[in-house]
Image 1 (cartoon, protein in one colour):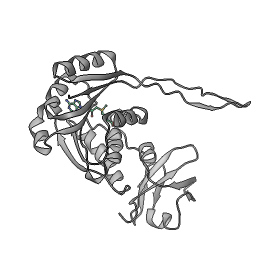
Image 2 (spheres, helix red, strand yellow):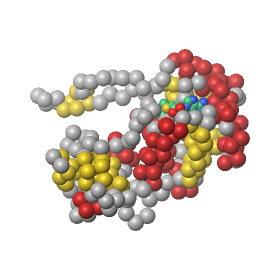
Image 3 (cartoon, helix red, strand yellow):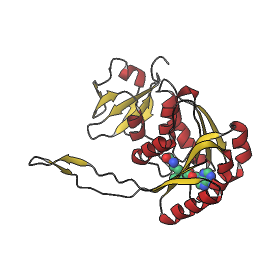
Image 4 (tube, helix red, strand yellow):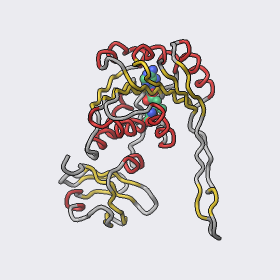
Length: 261
Ligand SMILES: C[S@@+](CC[C@H](N)C(=O)[O-])C[C@H]1O[C@@H](n2cnc3c(N)ncnc32)[C@H](O)[C@@H]1O
C-alpha cells in the first residue's frame, strides 16, 4: 500500500479524529469543513496543524488511534478485553476467525490487525444499522494498514446462518461471541470449530457466564478459563510519587474461554 487514505488528528485532550484524505471540502465531526488533501499535504507525522480554533497533532493511524476515533453505535469491547481475547485465542496470520455480533466493529479492528492479509475474518450481525457502523471502522483500517484479512460479512443471527458460515470456511481457528444469548450460538458454532480452536464468550452479567459455561460443556467444548480482567490506572501525584488515579474502577464483562479438543 502506498500511503494511508486516512489521517489521524489528535487534540491535546486526547480526543482523536479520523479524517479520510480526499481532495474536496469535507465536514468532519468536531472539526468543521475543510479540504483534507490541501490542509494536510505539508503536515508530517508528529507536526501540528490548526483547523478552525483547534490545534491538532497528526499521528499515524495505528490501532489505538483508530480505536480512539471509532464510530460507535452498539456497546464496544474495550482494548483491555480485546487484547486478552486475541491472546487467548492465539490469533495470528493465516487464522480463520468467526465473530458475532460485529456491533460497532471495535473488536473487529483488533482481530483484523493481527490476522494480516493471509487471514480470513467472518463476521455476523442481525442488525444492518450496527453492521454499517462496523464497516465504516473496518474500511478505515483497510485504508490505513499494510495488511488486513479477507473479510466476509453475513447478515442474520449466528444460530440461523450456520450453513453460510460453513460454506465460507471449512473450519474456524477462533470464535468470539459478544451477543446477549450465548447458548444457541455456542451450540450452533461448536461443530464449525477446528480441533484445537478456541471460543471466547463475552458476558456482561454473571447469568450469561454461567449459561455460556453450561452450553460449552453440553456442546463438547472444554472450558479453559472464566473470569474478569481488572485494570487500574496509575498516575503521578501532584506532590510527587505515583498512585492510582481517581476515577471509576468499572466492570466491563466476564470472559469465558473454551477449546475444542
Ligand atoms: C455489544 S454488540 C457487539 C459489540 C462488538 N463486539 C464491538 O466490539 O463493537 C452485540 C451485537 O450482537 C448482535 N446480536 C444479537 N444477537 C445476535 C445473534 N444471535 N447473532 C449474532 N449477533 C447478534 C447485536 O445486534 C449487537 O450488534
